[in-house]
Image (cartoon, rainbow, N blue to C red):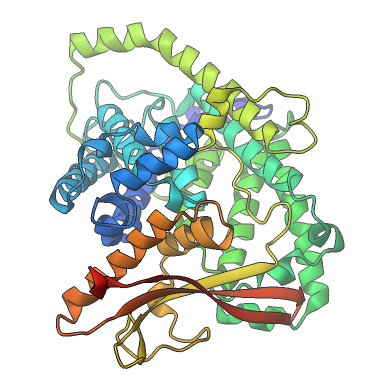
Length: 493
């Protein structure tokens, strides 16, 4: 009851703390999402995206880096030393073990660092498939390395149990800053005419590859779409103010949690955005103020699992104390880099700020990346997907992913609606970031070899990559087109 009274008065004003119970739940959520990300988004594409027999071999990666030296950081990672399916598979197994041990709270500080190194290595091996979920996950894992994750909801707590539930440090302030600025820039960068006119949501709902059945129903209410577009901007702008509001901060922080969950889970009803539905609660739970946990604890009679206490060795304890000043310097540097990179994303600021070489190199990493570019400055008016076909010697054309007759439309897309493949297609073909002949040749050969393993007696004279694009003219109106991209003749080898 004493702690409840302390919290009740302590949170009247802004206080850059994180609750230890929130940190414990954050560790469980973050570890679970990392495991799902590895098993769903990474492991099924192990050969395709991370080995020499896939679409991005080390030789092609070297060619990409040579043509654009700012991509040099693609070499920075442990996966540069693994190029076979078995080698990358072994690395993924070690990564999974690190995720699991961090999640259960066993030496969470050590395994959060190892998990970060592993995820960084996976990201840097292939930057052509990275998207918003990857960027937010590695940044959350980076912040997690500086927080006491094992003090609550952990079966393997290291050292003595901290009596009070509030933890305050520069890392906790940095987390609040990080989340607040993410949403500020989300709103600040939405400067396009679709957001100004209130049509942004209508255009976003027309992206067939992501849209769910409910999206079509919502499009029938243009006035509601207009209101929700404007309301989205209002919420995104409000988050940083609610997190740092000087008075009654415990209530404004709780309101920010409700708004974050409400806006994202509403979006998820209409659009399929991968792991975002469970990533948002992962960081939102850290914002929950202490008074809510105290109230919940009283209702649940403060359930406490049995824990195995692990003594902190004198060597590690001494090392932690020596590294503490270094941690502050590192977080302070990251604080500046995040703000700098975010400002450069805006046309209002980038003409006044220098953009040195190291900043350009950071632009090709998923770390210290704070703006997601989520429908900024406008939702795209050009959407697309792709299909891979195989032409037999008699001219008959089939879909290599399904083995069935090719359909030249948006049907039979299930084999292609994989988040990693779609991001790869967007970055290499649809928006022409990288479309070198070597990359397309390797991609076509990979598709052919995969088909032959499934259908060893299949006769394929030519492999074709076909791009489908759809340009939105107005809400509810679009013009779909198909475009032959590349052909490959495996039989000529």
